Structures are given as C-alpha cells and as structure tokens.
Image 1: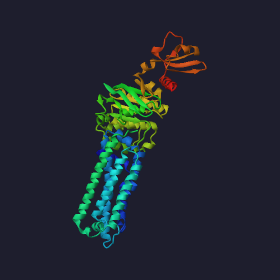
Image 2: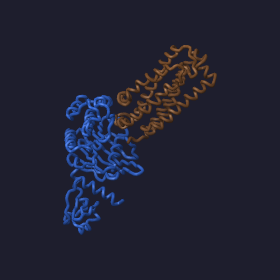
Image 3: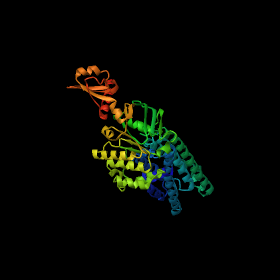
Image 4: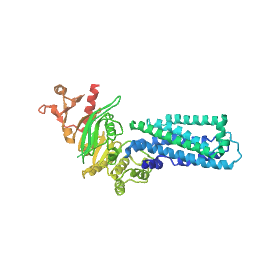
Length: 218
Length: 284
C-alpha cells in the first residue's frame, strides 16, 4: 500500500498539484470572499487533471502488473486523494487565520473563515469523495461522469449552506455572529465535519473496492 | 515441474469465446503461443495474470494456483507487453526506482548488469527508447526481481530483423539454467522456428494443438497437386487453395496416405496458421 502511494506521489501526480494548495489557499486573503470556492478549486482543477494523467499514462495497467491486491490499489488512490484534500484545507485554514487577523473589523456577507466554516468544508469534500470515488471505480478509468456528478453535489451543498447562512438568522448567528466566540461550539462543528469526512470517505472506499474487483483490465 | 499449467479456461464475451483452453509449460523451456490477430492470445494471457475474470478453469503457476496465491506469484512473474507503455515521459531511472520497491527479491547488481548488457541508458526517457529497447527494459526489470516465468505478449512485433534475432538469442540464454521459463505470444512465426521448444496454437478461442515444436510441424503435411488429385483428398484437408497449377492444402499427417502420389512437404508454422485461418473462413 505504502509503495503504491509513493508511486502516485513520485510518478502519477504532477508536482504542480502539490504547489496548487499553496496558491489556491492564498485566495483566502481576499477580504469577505465566498470562501467555499477555495477548496472547490481542488475538485475543479486537481481531480480532473490528475485522473486524466492516470489514464494517459496507462496507470491502471501498470499498477495491476505490480504484486499488489486490487484492494490496496483502491486504498492507495483514496489515500492520495485525501492527502491532497487535507493539504488544500490545512493551507487554506492557515491563510484564513491570517485573514481574520488582517481585517479585524470586516463585515462578512458570506461565511467567515472560522472553525465552524472549515467543518462545513470537510462535509463538502466528504460529499465529493463519496460520489467521485465510488462512481470512478465502476471502470477505474472514466472520470468525467464521476467528476461532474460529485462536483455538482459538492457545489449544491456549498450553495445551500451559504444560502441558509444568509437567510437563516440561527445559522448566520452560529457561523458569523455571536457563535464565533463560542469556541466549544466552533470546535464541535469542525469535529463533526471531520467525522463526516472520515465516514463518507470510508464508505466510498468500501463501495469502490467492491466495484473495482469486478473491473476487467483491458 | 510445470511452470505454467492451464486447465479448461473458459471466458465468454458477446462476440468471442475462449473455449476449454488448456496447455502446460514445462519449467526451463520456451513456449511459443501463436495465433492470428484476435484468436485469443492476449485474452488468454490476461486470464493467466488475473487481469480479466474467467468464467471457469484453473491456472497454476510454479505449482501454485494463481487464484489463491496471486500476490506471491506476481513476485515471480515478469511481463513484457510489446505494445503498451507506461509513464513514457519519465526517465528509466525514475520508473525503476518506483518499481523496485514492490519486489522483495530485487537485485540492484543484476539490474545494472542487464542495463549494461542491453546498452540501456537509465537517464533516457521511456519515450526515447526504441521498441526493442523497451522490451529489453521490461526484461531487465523482470530478471532483476528474479522472475521465474516470463510472460511476453508479442515482444518481437514491431522490431527489425536484427533486433528480433538479438532478443531471441537473449531468450535462449535465459533458459539455459533451467530456472526460467518463457511463454511468448507472437504472430511472427519465424521467431518461434528459431527459438521455441514448444508450440501452442490457438485459433478462434480454441487450442488447436500444444506440443513440442517439431512434433507439431510434423503432424501436418502441406500437399500440392493437380485439381484431379484434389478430389482424392478434399474431404480430409483442413483447407486448401486453388491456383492455376492445381491446389495446395493442409492435412493432418494421420489422414494422409504416404503412398499417394501427391507431393507432400512439412509445412512451416506460418503455413499451418494460414490454412487454419482459411478453414474458419470456409465455414462462415
């Protein structure tokens, strides 16, 4: 499994995609922006390009020839996706902390980058993973449909959450108003988000393995 | 001991079927796996390597069933697929560094020996290697992880005669110790006449014959004669062609009466393949 992850990091994934979180994260510095867009760049840019790369490089055939189980092939790929997602989120969080200190008196129309918001981002990526990973492994090479469906779902979640955040006074209060100072509340939202992220990704992995076992490598 | 033992392999596709494919390869020999394009060579090889799911049948490699010992056996199998490339924009060195981590018996000394011997430059990119060099690179990888069975799918297709001959010499050197066995699919039959010990012939998803090379060739006769002679043997012929001088046709040696005055010669592998393919056409 470890060797497979290293194979992806050294061969399969373009180094650019490890630099991207640093650049995209910097968008957090735009004051009062719609910050949901920042982690979405991962879904829009990294995922399609990375999987196009795997396909053109015949990665599936290459990997199958190595002495590894199909289960490990999926596990490694999911790990690589999660590593990149965490890289995007953690770097964005760091930039977010800078933003909060940089513009202390800003009125946020969209969600401000507090911990609760990052919990919502984890949920968004959880939704993305559960759809993308499980759909992709029906064939293990067609990523277009899986990407379209999962990105749509993630954006719908972000859109609805943000809309509620504006329309609903309770939610608005929790993420942008008085709730911001309630550290316990913020941390619990973040932890809940992370738990959902882990759970959905595990489910995606299990479905993907079941599907990939049936795939014929041509 | 059998390096490869395939029994009653069946796989059904909508337009194609592998039917009861069985053959055995003794350890330390080269087996040529011949058949026309689309006859089922690659499908068989992919079934052996568990890349596709078989409907029924059993594949044993070095005495172990691949269904149960897949990972363990893959450590001992080396592959070269003539027409498939991976990570062609990466350097040989980069690719090797990734691949070697997967094999517990990787031998760096052996690897560099083979690189020197095959005149491979590890700083070149895969895309810069010629077709022959790519096959040699696959071989170097396979041999450096101590592969006991080499499964080569059309390794000589696309190579010039010199490179082919060079590769065939390498194959023969490899099996001298009796440790390594080679299954080698091709449609370039002259290669097998040079180096194979056994021939397995597949046609339309079915094994026509699997035996020692000369025995295989001797089991057929190529007849040529006039049209009137054709009528004497027409029913026994596998297939025949009519030309302005009369006919030429392929027959099983056992069906041919040697006292007949029809001229008979031992066919080449290519002729056997062609006449079998023609037989399929005749029934369509």
